[in-house]
Image (tube, rainbow, N blue to C red; front, side, top):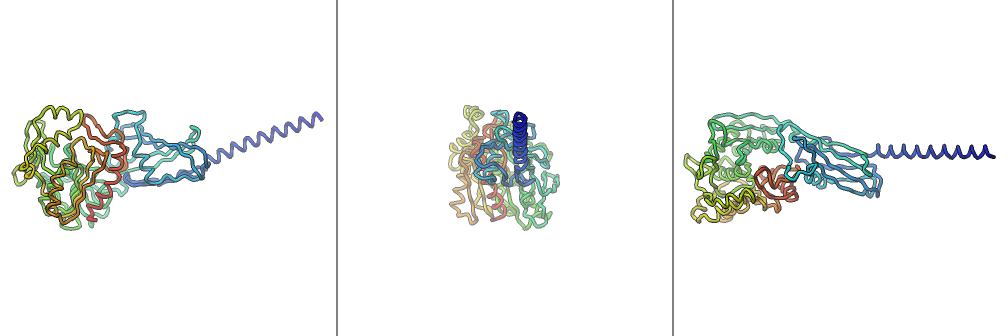
Length: 437
C-alpha cells in the first residue's frame, strides 16, 4: 500500500510538472503568435494603420510608440488598452495622433523635434506591446521623406539660386516655385514633399550670402521669383505656360506679391503670411526700408513702430503685437498703398494661419488683402484656413508637435493639439490648390 501511494504521488507530481511546462509552452506560443501588422515603409506625410493580432480579449495591454530623432533624443507616447477580441485595430487617425503627441524622454520642456539634416535619410518608428510590464511583441516601421527617389538639380544662374526637386514624371508635371521665410535658407524639405506628390518644385533663395543676391531682407527684387518661374517653363519643368507659388511666412508675403505682379503664376499657397508689405529686416540699419523692390523701386510698406518697449517685450511674449500695432497705427493711405493687390492673382489662392501665431499675427495681417479679394470679386476661389490653437510653425504632417511654441529665443505660439490638427488638415488643401482642384 505504501509503495502504491508513493507511486501515485509520483504520478501526480509528474502530471503537475507536465501541466506546468505545457502551460508555459502555451504561454510562450501565445506570445510568439502575437503579430503587429503594418506597412514596412511609409512617407512621412502618409497615414497608416496598425493591427495587433492574437491578443487575449479583456486583458490589459500597454502600447508604446517610440522613435529617436536625429540628435539622438528618444521620443515616446504610450497608452493602455483592453481588446474586446483577439485583434485590435489602431486606425489611421489614432496612429497619427500617437505619433504627433510623442514627448521627449526624459521630459525636456524646451526640446522640440528637430528638422532632418539629410533629406534622403529615414528613421524607424517602433511599436512595442507590453503586458504586465513585460514585452510581448515589438515591430518597427520605416518612415522617410522620399519614397519615389526624387532627383535634384542645383541651379546657380546669376541671381537665380536654387535647387530643383523633380517629380517622378517630371516631363508632364506642373511646376511650383517654393519660397523660404526670413531665416534665409532654401525650403528644400517642403520642395521635396511637393515633388513626392507630383510637382517639379524649385526651392530658391532670394537673399543671403551670394554675390548676386541682397545680403539682407531689404528691397529684394521680386523679379527673382519671376525668373524662377520662367526657368521652370523654359526648361520644360511645367505642364503649361504657368506655374504655382508656395511660400512660408515672409515667403508667403512674397508669394502673394509675385502672384499679383506676374502673369506666369497661377495658383498660390501662402503659409502664415502677411497680406501687406512689411518693413524689411537688417542687422545693420534701424530703419532699413521696404522688404521688396519692383523695377528698381522700393515697394510701399508698413513701417515698424519705433516703440522699444513693445520691441523688448516681443522676446518674452512674441513679436505678433509688434507687427500688429504697426498695422493698426498706420494711416489708411499707408495701409492701402502697402496692401498686396491679390485680386490680380490669376488662379486659386490658399492662405493658412494659426490663430495663436505669436511670431506675427498672419490672421490679422491678411485682413486688408482679404478685403480686396471680396471687394474686387476675385474670379478664382480663395480660402483662408485659420487653425485654432496653432501657432506660426505649421509644417508637413506627421511629426511630433511638442514644444513648438518656443524654439530658441523666439515665441511661435500654439500647442500640441492645435499644431497636430493644423499640420494634418492643411496639407491636403495645399496639394489640391496647387493642382487647381
